Length: 310
Image (cartoon, rainbow, N blue to C red; front, top):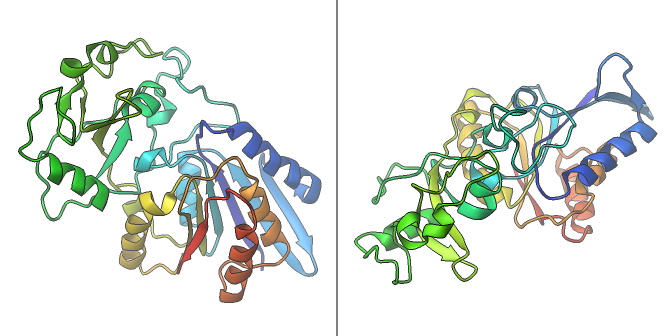
């Protein structure tokens, strides 16, 4: 029986090209490329057979999650918990895609799979990638709102506090009122998306402004997680996505084994190494295989401290 390996690359501003190309180079040199289907490979060794695909779209990711017993790898940015975002091919996606070439901004094409509301930096994300996420407008949190404790603490601490610009600490303040030059910035798509934005706190000596935006897990709710393994190889994926994945796995009665990062990976060949280990016959779906996998991945410096959640 063939082992299905599904590698889906999402958008990532951090050396996406190098990360992607080393995986492709390894597969080109190791496996047999399917001449009829782009990104498809076959590998046979010692009686084991593998069907491997490398894809790039939101639809591909969704399909992989519902492929029976598949070993799925998401390799891309966590998008601060907004959900992975995808391009359409292996072509590089600009940090701010121009509106003429990209009428729909790929950085906004999230697969929603996390908390209801998330903390996002205005400059690093919204301005740089020319997005305009819906702002979280509540100043109080209903008990049933699904948010990380960090966001809950920000909103709770800000409740009833003055929104004066000269005061420090958490509060929902107008960016236009407090930092008009920043609010007036025009992004690469010709839009001033910060003009009506509010921020809850600042970083980097008042040069970064953190807002809270709506997110949710609507797309995750639409899959049954029939995959055997999901490796979310993205920035602190455990922080952003584990609780939502755990909820969905329970609701769908899924047995998909989850591997997630606990810190930010820093330009290392972990996806390539993961595939190498799988093709060597190490099965991350089994207890013994997961022990070997975690041990080997742990030897890679700055690999994101991958952990398993059965």
